[in-house]
Length: 64
Image (cartoon, rainbow, N blue to C red; front, side, top):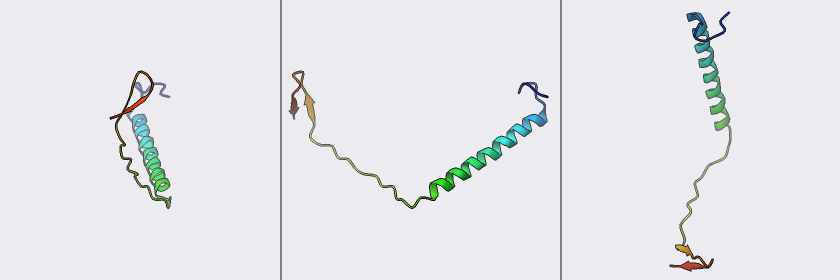
C-alpha cells in the first residue's frame, strides 16, 4: 500500500495517469454535449459611447 505519491511505484503512477486521462475525456465530452444541446443563439450587443462627461467637485455634471 502506497501512502505517498513519492514512494509509489511505476504501476501506481500509471494508474493515476490513466484515471486522470479517462476523467478528463469524460469531462470534455460532458461539457461539449451540454454546450451544443441548446437551441439558442448568442449575439453580441454593441454599446456605443455617449457624450463625454466630467463630474465636478460640486457634484454637478459638466458636458464637454
